[in-house]
Length: 118
Image 1 (cartoon, rainbow, N blue to C red):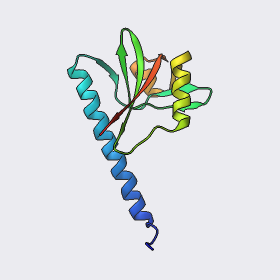
Image 2 (tube, helix red, strand yellow; image 1 turned 90 degrees about the vertical axis):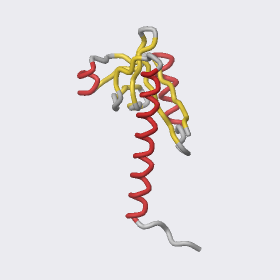
Image 3 (cartoon, one colour; image 1 turned 180 degrees about the horizontal axis):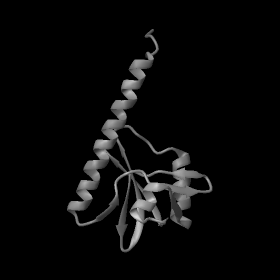
């Protein structure tokens, strides 16, 4: 039987996962821009829903609509709770709140999409 991970090991693992997720999101948004898709924001914009806030990796504009984008890499998965929030946003939209939303002039998000990348 192995020993449980130490706090240091756990923190390093979480940081590595976060870093690889951030790298995957950057590459994903770079690819969208190369295809001519407007990336409005690449950092966490708070989207208010009745289920709580949703913070996508970025926001794109497609046919005049602002869409939140979540990039999941490696073994990352979307939780059922994230899925429920996304469904709400896709059906009713979500109010963008906070300093970052104000800085980008974003008031309403009209959809959410999650992309899974290696």
